[in-house]
Length: 344
Ligand SMILES: *Cc1c(COP(=O)(O)O)cnc(C)c1O
View 1 (cartoon, helix red, strand yellow):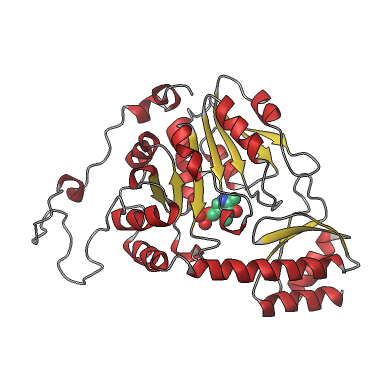
View 2: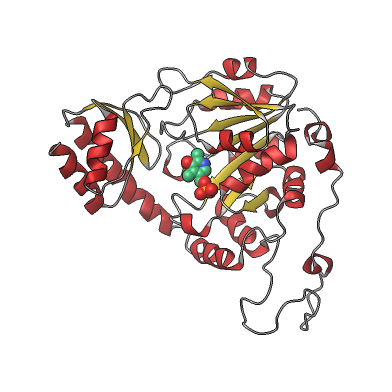
């Protein structure tokens, strides 16, 4: 890996971060807080939240087996995605390399930050080869994006190839594991100590059933986490979110129930799709959704919208012609979708 100092934008490397009133106070004995211009009334909403979300990280450490200093928390994974550009990529000069098709936010954030976004098309199995990704890189490539299980294809990517990219690339490799709780494939979290250039993204939005609270995680070396913390908004994760995350993390086995039910429903729904005359192919998935090639995705999509049922039309995405992406709902929702499709 190139040294972090060379990878990070010079202005970010030398940045003196905002220092809040609570940052400067670190003792435990105080009980009169007249340092942050807060209102003494309207507890508990009157106080600024912990900028470093220590309690949440301590609970996450137990669930994820990652030490607190290697956890960054953001306003959804989206914040961690955007920060990657702001920390590592000089606008108008640097570039990033990503697989395609994949999650749309990597490109949107690249465009916002004026960073060239290079793509390498997946193969016919929606998998990739490390060599092809590496061949798309040059000396200005700062980040390689890998999403596994991938969105919108649903499949996990070849683990050995991902590891090869991490080992051979001199810059930052970000592996987005938003759907890892649904996957057979194991998380790469245990690889973090061996790979200082690895950033792993996870989220409370999918298996944890908490998309509304906006809590995303980035696991990385403590040096990278420190830089992220320097650049983020001081109070990027609000108090209500921190409280609700703690509530969810109290009972981490609760999500295993969601996952088990959703995986059973996924099997049932995919079997039913296979028998639909309007479905030409369903693709292997390791996530809480699957991609299905239909006879006419646009027409079927519009037909479903008329019935008040919304799936994702991926027809225009490379390699996904005539594909619909179907999220697994509850039994009633899935049955309604199937009933509608059988009447098409
Ligand atoms: C849904 C999703 C996320 C989650 O984003 P949040 O901002 O945490 O809600 C991240 N990555 C991928 C690939 C996703 O599909």
